[in-house]
Image 1 (tube, rainbow, N blue to C red):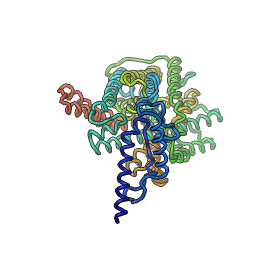
Image 2: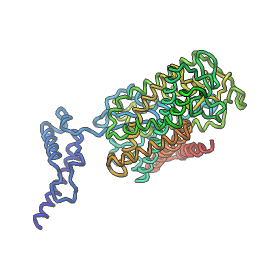
Image 3: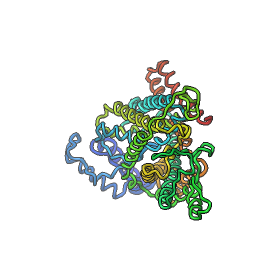
Image 4: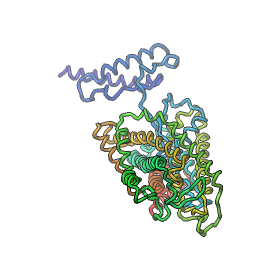
Length: 553
C-alpha cells in the first residue's frame, strides 16, 4: 500500500514537471506536441508517458541545453518536433485549401500574396448566380446592393479580425474565431458557431452537387450531340446568330427543364440517351459512385494540390464573359418601376434574393483570422483585407454587369437569365463547354475537402476524433451526399439554395457575433456609446431581416 502511494506521488511529481516544461520552458523554442495516443490514462497506476513521448522529450531537452533560451540559432529540427496538424481554410462557395504552417503567430506571405489568397478563397461558384441576382433586383439596384453588401460584410469581417485584440486578460495569439465566440458566449457560442458553420458547409456541398450534375449532364450532351451532328438550339427559344443565347426556362414555369431539350420520337438511340442521361433523374446518381469513395479518405491532402484550378476557372469565366459581351454588345433600357416585354425595371422588390446570395458570396469570416496569421506584415492586415474585398466586389460587378447588359434583349427577355448563367449558353457552345469542364473538375477536387471539413467539425466535436471509424464516416457522408442528390432531383435551383444557406450562416458569423462581441467588449471597458450601440444593433436587425425575408420571396 505504501509502495502504491509512493508511486502515485512520483507520478504526480512527473506530471507537474512535464506541465512546467511544456508551458514555461519549451515555448522559448518550438511548440512541443505529444500525440494523444502516446499518453496513458490518468487513472492508470503505470508510467504515464510512453517511450516514444519520453524519447522525444529528451531530444528537445537536449537541444534546449545547447544554447541560451534567448538564442534561437539552435532549435529542434523538423524531424524531432512532430508535424503540426493539417490546417484548412475555406469559403463555402469559394476555394478550400491547406495552409502552410507558420511559427510564432506570423507567416511569410507578403501583402500581395495575402490579398490574392483572400480573393481566391472568396471567389467561386457564387459568381454564376450574380447576374441572376442583378436581374431579380434590377440593374441599378443590383449594382448598388453589391457595393453596399461588400462594404457591410467588410466592416463585419474587420470586427472579426479585431475581436481577439479586444480580449486583454488572456493570450489570444493562437485563437481562432470560434475560440473568441466561446470566450464571450460559453458553450452556446461554441456549439452555435459549429451549427452555422455546418450549415454553410453542407449548403455549399449541396450547391456543388447540383452544379456538378448540371455540368456533367451538359458535357455528356455536348459529346452526344457532336457525334450525332445534332443542333440543340432548334427546340428552344434562342437567338439566331453565330453566338447563340438560349432561354431554357421559356414555357417551363420559370425553371430549366431537367431533361435534354431535344427529342425525336423516331430516333431510338436518342430516346435511350434521354432515358439514361437525364439532368434530374439519372446524372445526380452517377456522381455517387465517383465522389462517395473520395469522401472517405482520412486526409484530403491530395485534393489540396489542385487549388490552382479555382483561380483558373474564375479567370476563364472572366475571359468568357468578356468575349461574349464583345460579340453580343450591350442591350439596355432604363425603366425605373415599369416592366416591359424585354426589360426589367431598375428597382425590383425581389432585391433581398441578391442580398442572400451576396452574404455567402462575401463570406470569409470563419477563416479570415487564420488567413491573416500568415501575413508577414501584421500591421497591414486591415489594409490588405480592404483591398481584397474591393477586388472581390469589382469582380462580382464585372461579371454581373457584363452578363446582364450583354444579354440579347430583344429577342429574349432579361427574365430569361438563369440562376446559373452558363445555362443560357447551349451545350454545343465550345467556350461554355470548356468552362463547364474546368468547373466540374475543380468542384470534384474541392468537394472532398469540404466533406473533410464537415467531418472534422461534426465528428471531432461529438466523438473527439475526426475518424472514429469507417462506419461513422460513411454514415455522415451518405447523409451529405443524399441531401445533394435529393436537391439535385427535386430543387435544382442554385440561386435559391445559395440565398437560403447564405442568409442562415451569415446571420451568425457575419451579422450577430461580430456586432455582439464588439458591444460586449466596449461595455466591459465602459466605452460603449449610444451611436455605436444603435449602429451595431441595426446590423443585427439587418441580418435577421435578410434571413426572414428569404422565405417570402
